[in-house]
Length: 248
Image (tube, rainbow, N blue to C red; front, top):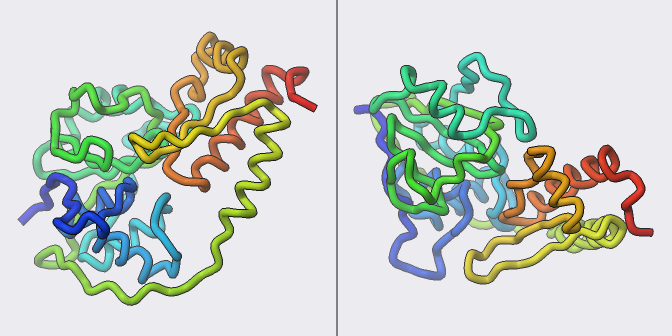
């Protein structure tokens, strides 16, 4: 039986819900709850909490569920900054995509699943059309994987107990605070979406739009790891395009 994408399953216990995109796509392909998916990731990678998830973390979790990730680029140069937009990737892969193939995509620092003309991710929640207005079609595609079963069926292995680890977020926040002060960046936490938004100065944002730079459409982050990477991109943008504008 081929894999089939499903709506994200947050379960019935509110406290057990994980709202981040990694556990959400694991849930949407396996049927487990997002809380179960987060516990599985923690048990395999020994992290304290699951927010942003690396390719290795998602790969290891899916492997434990009898699902393999095979990387594909379909002849395209995939990149977080200069790769094709999700809309362009969808247009270019019309012949390759069908109801029997499931693709796991990283676009706009966000995990998402596509099967034929159907789409699901942690933000959308339900399985929708690839033309749904909620999908961020301008996000740049950085990674694409085809998912296949490696055994007769998908399984949900029991997750081990949590492992206590050191939280380095405090140090990261201090370092990023220095950069935001130096370059005039702004970090905001949006309570309605439980996400962070990161912005350059109004002048720099306008310039990014005029240059059609990928940063003009890249503001939302799920955790401090993503914020750090986004600010790194913004610092490079400032150094290249506005070297005289950094704040002393």
